[in-house]
Structure formats: C-alpha cells, structure tokens
Image (tube, rainbow over all chains, first blue to last red):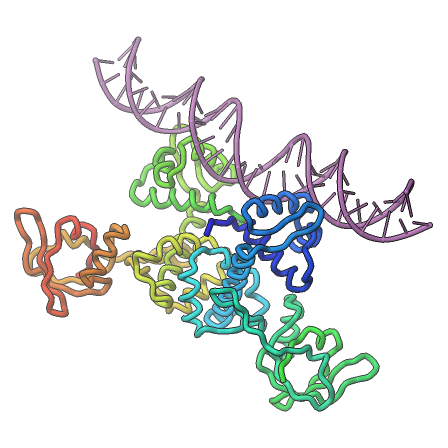
Length: 220
Length: 220
DNA sequence: GACTTAATTTAGTCTTGCCTAAAAAATATA
DNA sequence: TATATTTTTTAGGCAAGACTAAATTAAGTC
C-alpha cells in the first residue's frame, strides 16, 4: 500500500465512477469533465498513475483501472459512504448536506478506523442515498432495484435509493417528506406526460413528474 | 474566513503550541524544529502568513499570532481534541492511538460538523489526555491542576491528565491500568529517588518513578 | 482516399511548499 | 570593541499539480 495523494485518489475515484456507467475504456475528456480539470492536466496525471500501475493506459486509447487501482477506488467509495452514514445517523445531517463533508473525510488514512466506524454504525449496507457500501474486499451488495418510472398502476414498492444526488433534488424529496424506506402504491400513471400518482403508507397521495420518477430507485 | 491550506494550518498550530510554553515571540528555528522542516522553509512561510495577517512578523525578531491567527489555531486544537474524544469514546481507540488520526481529521473543513460532533459527544470539556477543549470562541476551561510529583504523603487526588503524551508513556499507563479519573492516596514518598507509592481506589498499591509522577496531572 | 473535426498529448509556465548553500543580521565572547 | 558563533534570511532549485497554446493522432465525412 503506497501512499497516494488526495489528487491521485480523486482521479481513481472518478475513473471508477465513469466505469460504472460505461463499460468500455474511459477517455481523457470524460475524466477532465468529471473533475473539472483541463484535459492536458488529466493526460499528465494518467501517465503518472500508469507508472504506478494503478491504471492501464494506452495513449489516445483511454484508460482502465488495474486490480490495484480498483481496490483503492472502491476503498474510497467505502469510506465516503460510511462517513455519510455517520453524518446523517449520528450528527443528524440531512442527505443533501453530507456529500462535501464525506468528500473530505474519505481521504483520511486509517483502514482500522474505517472498520471500527463501520461496526460503530451497525454494519450498514447502504448509504443515506441508498447506494451500497463496499466491504473491505471491495465487494458490493447487489440488490434488485428498478426505477420508480418503470412501475405500473397497482404496483406496491418501497423507495430504496436515488439516482440523482443533486442537492436540489434531495431537498425537494425532503420537502415532500419522501425518504428511504417510504412505502407506497402506484394509484395512477398519466398517459400524457407520464406523471405518476402514488399513495403513501401514511395515507398521503402524491403526484410526481416523469423526471422525478426516473431518479428514484425502488424495490418491490 | 479565507481558506487555509493544511500546511498553513499546521504552522499556525505549531506557533500556538510554542506560545503556550514560551510567552515571548517565537523564533524561526523553534518552529522548524517543532515541525521538522528547514529553517529556510519556515522563513518563507512566515512571510506568507504575515502577508495574510495571520501572524505579526518582524524579520530576525520572531513571530506572534494575530487575533485572527490565534482564532484559526485554537479552532484546530478544538477540532483535534473533539475528534480524539470521538475516536476513544465511540470507536474504542486507546489514548495512545488517536493522535495521528486526529491530526488528519482536524483539517476537515466544516465548523457546523464540529459543533454537531461536540453535541453528539455530550459537550466534553477535556480530551482523552485531559487537555481542555476550546469552545467556538477559543475560550479554554482552566482547571486547578498540579503535578502528581508535587503531592505529599497522605494527599488524596484524582488523575486528570498527562503532560507527556508519548505513545510509550500512554501505553505504560494503560499497562498498569491507570487512566483519567483514577482516584488514589499517596501512601509514601521515597526520599532517595522521589518515587511515590500510591494506594488506588480499587485497593491496588503502586510504586511510580519520579519521571512518571512528573508527567501526570492531578486534582485534589 | 483526402480532408475536416474532435480528442488527446506535448511544451512551456505558474504556484505551493519543500530543499541546500550562501549571505546577512543578531548575539556571544575574548 | 572586534571577532566568532548562532540564527535567520535570501537565492536558486525541485516536484506536484494545475494552466494555456500548439502539435499530434484518431475519427468522421465527402
């Protein structure tokens, strides 16, 4: 375990994130875009990360994490999500406030601390946004999940995560009192704009736009 | 509140630490020695910190924190000590293990988080080594404390802190099951080498060397 | 296949924070 | 007081990580 700089860690994390959506090799511009840095700077860094065997990199042909690189990256995700659980569960932050803090906390070195933190939090499997927390080996619990938008009238389900974690979206969900674990039944789908009408467990009825429904993960 | 780099924060913290012992202005070499950096580099940084009005600095005549600089430095101490309480109380670390982790955690930005952490921990006034935790204004609780070595035969007291926080010392105290809050009576002082014999609340009797007794704070 | 456009890399700089060696100022000593 | 010693600063460099501008490679189009 070589010591990586915060910058290096952030590159690895971005590459992992992009790999999730896009199975093929990641382009320089994609990374540049993800972390708001010039493509030239990214190019520089990719060479360095390749030298350290954290990525495989062929000039002009994109980049992929090595096993080592992937391990580092997943460990960062693990740390990030555990800290998010800590911030929401123990310090009562709301789910739209925790990302930036976790972004800092994830770079604190000390795997022993993280393992103890995990235990202290009761070995949670998902973070406050419903994203799974990798274990020490980088294994990630898989969960059959679908988007709310895919449900049909009459379906019953529970909210287990969000696809978009933008502050405005999370705050909107808070404002309508929707959170992880909320159970509901689809009582109608508007043909015209694909809005969905839900009846919540607490009896409230709610109309959600197609865009909102496309960003909420549910499980039946 | 300008954003300070970790490096800048560490300089401020060192200057504060040195000021505690030494009321006069702090010399370049002292700082260099404290943080293990060349005097030349320190000189450089002092100029930068003075430009930012965090210290008052007169070439060749040493350095002092400004009100602003002192505020930053005390806030760092506050964060450091609160994180130490967290690590020992919640994650079950022992007092000799927490320093390096707290050294990293103290640089995480977010005063709101720290205030919530403080509350979560039950507003502790002292860290695991018995050092006081500054409040948000930088005020530090004062406590009448004396060194164990100053006590006389027959005195009763309670251990409230340590002067030396070296790992070996803390581990030694752990090994003989002495911790903050331990109550005792001095049942003898050896004239020859000034060792002290204590009777603990739990009935155990213990002989401690002059050096050990010179590094334990007690309160009667 | 030649040409245009988009993506990527290289070249040359800048800032931060560190270093060593040398110069300058302050302090101690004879 | 003059000299020696210690402390501090200046000068010149280096590595990391960023930038812009220019060059190169790949991909898309006619």
